[in-house]
Length: 494
Ligand SMILES: Cc1cc2nc3c(=O)[nH]c(=O)nc-3n(C[C@H](O)[C@H](O)[C@H](O)COP(=O)(O)OP(=O)(O)OC[C@H]3O[C@@H](n4cnc5c(N)ncnc54)[C@H](O)[C@@H]3O)c2cc1C
Image (cartoon, rainbow, N blue to C red; front, side):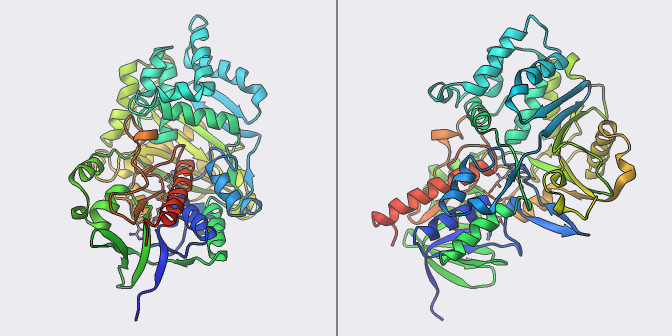
């Protein structure tokens, strides 16, 4: 049988792969999309249980339809099919002396900032500096932001304040943004993301579950002639005479392609799928040294009635200690993340909890509520010092303290650990973000879309792009589509 021939072969159907497939098919390129899983969506995928729709990992889109995700949807004609929902009571920060509702309205911003900082232990004397900090975090000019790309969030905060309560809050927020410690994350990237988020004011959840976004993109790709295959694991990216020739699947099928775009991590693509020997030594070393973000342990809870009113909660708990943001010290704040990196349950257990059914009640049987909560854990290559059961116990204790009586309403509970994420996304270690957003790995210094092998490209959260999670992956796909277009036009791809 002759091998089917395509212009572009896309590996993966997460936000990165599905966006790219839609953009490339709409540009008239003969596109094949390959997904190893039975269902599309990558980190935005889902499963169903007892009438509940369960998002696999991702929930909130930080810029709704107004950022890169929105831009891809616009370009491929999918805007009207995705409704981003934003409840008035978007979030509440609660636990360890904090109780701060976060509303979507801009008018409450100052009041919220005052209340939060007061509860964190920021004194009136410190307040003007914290106001300047907030202002710069939200509204710094882009030319200034660039100067912070190679410095850490901690260096940026220290310019204004060393208040440990404030730092412990920043610690939690940066874990939500980048799944990485704030003293290692890029300040430029954090400010860029916060500024865009404030401009968009569109943090939201897509009606129908996060999978709706890649689904609409893949539908657009198929409408433009693309072929989508699921249960199609790429075993090998074929390189012949120094250029990419196509892919071989685990079941032996072979496809030819002028360009292959991998949305697995760079480490997986270079060392497992293509083969290290095809890459120059300095590139191999760079990829080997790339830092990935951490992973998450999630608990999914089906409840017999509506128990939580907000769209999401940020819960602080100290199940094994007496951590209080107000009385913390900087070394204690650091230790929280250091423990986490060693797989030890830290003194402060922050939970990020989302209630998808408060955005879209159709995701559960009538009257029921679905809740998912997570906390950070190291990637699977590091061993958890405390066993998964201990993490589950600590998380449940933290939840019970924040939402008393919730346990009486649990119909079922499921734990999704780091290994499950790793095996679903295919990215070794299972990082939430496969190239962490640290100095040296953001903006101009982020690994590029073009690989050193002609015809091989990287997209998704590992290369190019800027933004939080899904935004990062969608922005990377937009950049990749432009590069492919240019390389085809200039005859760089056969
Ligand atoms: C638990 C969790 C929670 C998160 N929460 C949020 C959130 O709330 N908001 C947010 O914006 N971001 C969140 N993120 C981050 C965000 O989901 C990711 O950064 C983004 O979705 C990554 O998209 P991607 O296309 O790069 O990769 P992925 O979504 O990981 O997709 C990669 C795809 O490639 C496929 N694949 C890999 N190898 C092969 C192969 N050999 N052959 C065929 N297919 C292959 C995989 O099966 C997968 O479908 C979260 C991530 C995780 C893990």
